[in-house]
Image (cartoon, rainbow, N blue to C red; front, top):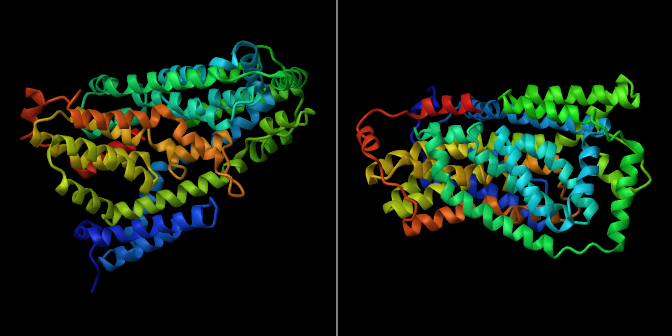
Length: 496
């Protein structure tokens, strides 16, 4: 007898739905913590296979599960493509002198004592202006990593400040895809949504700024660090053009992003301009530029620490990250198509009592979906779709929900290494985990603004502060038609 399609399959029981999730988390834990090996790829692949078996036992066909995985991969392809283009861009921007120029003048103008706080503010302003955290991390953030290295500041501290600032802008910019998605999926006005996020966003940023300022104030610049700064500046001045020409690729990309040109063509134009400047300024031939774009830039300045900073980029440097994202997204897509995630969310909803529990559950569900599925869009769309009617029943505005899923979705995505956001941050900023050394992952707790915002959101949920009741217009909508799952998926794809 022919099996039914996924559209006709019942939701699995909670126990069945948890099987692939629990087993995959267990495999990841064994791989990472017992064997001290941070390569989650195969554990996620096995998790996908377990999900497929569970789906098959529930009456799903392989075609259904495969299409679920490919659907999520399709939605995330712009993110994967962006990651590849950033790898190309990084190599040519170093070869052209764009990144070296930013590092040089950063060393000239920024005092180590307020470097971390300034990094967060700079990334905040850039990300807010252009509406994309990824472009901010891949351009300004990369240069700040170099400046921090010259100052002797651990890379995870700098990365934490960069991530805090970059994803703050992504959260509250009206140009951001996730900001518009959160508003769309909860049927809220995007500017009302942004205003309603301020009670959590502003305190989180202020606290993060004070911490970075305090830590920076403890930084002392001794003779060895001054010598390293001098060596960095000498090496950069000797091997690169520090005039206006290398700035052109950066200025063009920022302008394109501001005018809402899609990230992939904007970044690719930046890559081409970087390659042109590299050829014009340094005489590289076409083959050398293409080699840089694929394998990364290579130079020997005579200063080992500077060489390790500049010898990076290229498509090959992103391969590990791209494959990790694909495994994680396929696993998340299979969980969504077999309705395992929906079963877990419904179980949580059935145990949720009152607004305090509902708001807290919405935040934590977005966090958990981020961690399990590896997809920030799914972490916003799934709880946004399923929790909305519960807010209507309790008489609370859906703006509370849109804020919750932004905090658990947008802000948490860079803190999960196998999530699209976390994989991008680690790949772009060179945060590698090797030989059991997990220090690079310290950027996660040090990205204070990202995790403080949902914590503050949970505090507000428990106290009732800044928890908006539904207005008359919203209450009237409760009895009217609202978007169902297909509409939400279409919105998510369109915004992504």
